[in-house]
Length: 285
Image (cartoon, rainbow, N blue to C red; front, side, top):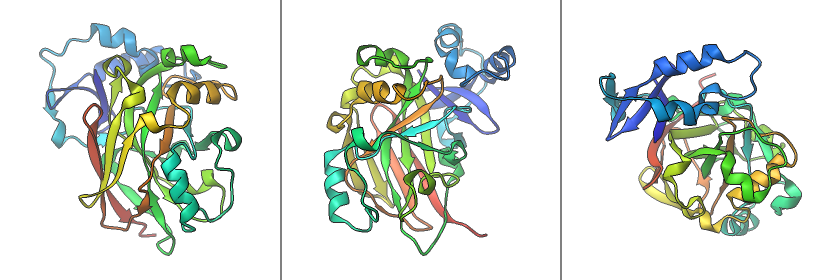
């Protein structure tokens, strides 16, 4: 199943190019959960409500006409994996514009980093590029959506904690500041176009997607090339902190990252995860 958020915080199911509105389900779930619930209630109840939902008779709009938001409304955290593709490590070592401060390129030593929740955005919201005198790069990534609470999750149980997957952009301001600081600018964590539930992805370790800028391909990615694969990432992150329903995990980028400028259009596309385009704008102060 493909689940999206769109418009003014509406919830929808995507089928055959249309979005069927199920916002009423979202409203019921939200009011039934306590305010201090850790995680996103709609994701926490995903299996229950998707089993029972009926689309017949529901209002719908064309997917192409929708203003898509990030598919999760309330993650407790955005996690991201550094240096998780060998080819990207190689390009990083060759390009001083990417690696302006010497850091460990071993993910096991560097650890998972966090991005501010306020950096999360959907495709329709665009990217407002700050600091026009500094380089900002696109980094296309697979994003894991956590579906079940867990801590110290063993590798062999890791996929039980996955609600689904989507595509993401980990936009990156280059510079000497801490990585989390530079990657937490408003709108620099784009996720979409929708969440594809885990039962529809038979091989998450063999997912392909492409990233283009202004129609020119920059990245051709397959998750089989991850250094830490999906189960290992979940095991690793959960050894440090509890994962909650709706948490987003950006799994790392492959080679082909590069600068973007205001006016550019970044497009991500995948046969299994759909695709989206997002405009790059500039901060008008």
